[in-house]
Image 1 (cartoon, rainbow over the protein chains, first blue to last red):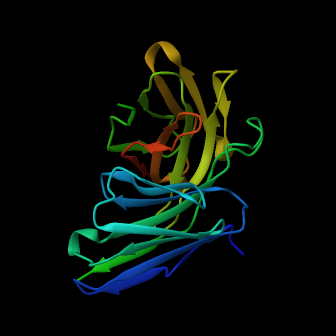
Image 2: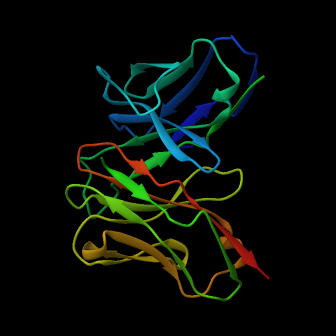
Image 3: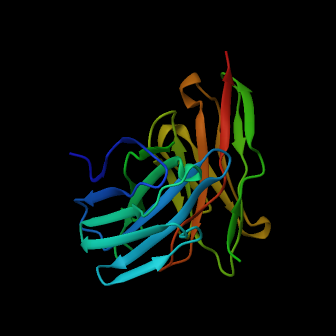
Length: 117
Length: 112
């Protein structure tokens, strides 16, 4: 099983619908992130969470909300989807306590491709 | 503001030729620096990372990167590219206890 699992892998939804993207991890990391990838724009941070009680907005949080249900689960919601939210969405985890010479880094899920029509 | 800049949107090289992808960062202090690769339809894979110490970092798949503080750069290199290296490459930076910031990516094309 993957360390970071995103569901669904692909989703087509209609404008105005509410949709939730889910992320679960088996890394045991406290920190989780949601990014959005658009061609030519790289990955932009939507929301991040440094522990279960901590939620922070990223650079493009408008139109999105998140829920950190447990250390292992971090969900992203689009309350009322619009076509310019069509993108590839990535969840990631990290743990800054790991040995700097060892395994510190970010682990990414495989992505969710969302299309809003 | 903190930023990571990849000046080249597209790079085309011939198979077997050497490669250098540029990355510049703007941070108050030296950040952690990363290079990721994304093959078509895939997620991101970590190639290498720099935290401190030796400024030449070796990564996977024959890649290396050199940290140059005086130029605020962390360029990725490979002596001889293979067709399978065609992908999009992302440079990223992070302040300790902060979140990672990505450049906009460089798409690498390989000519046979």
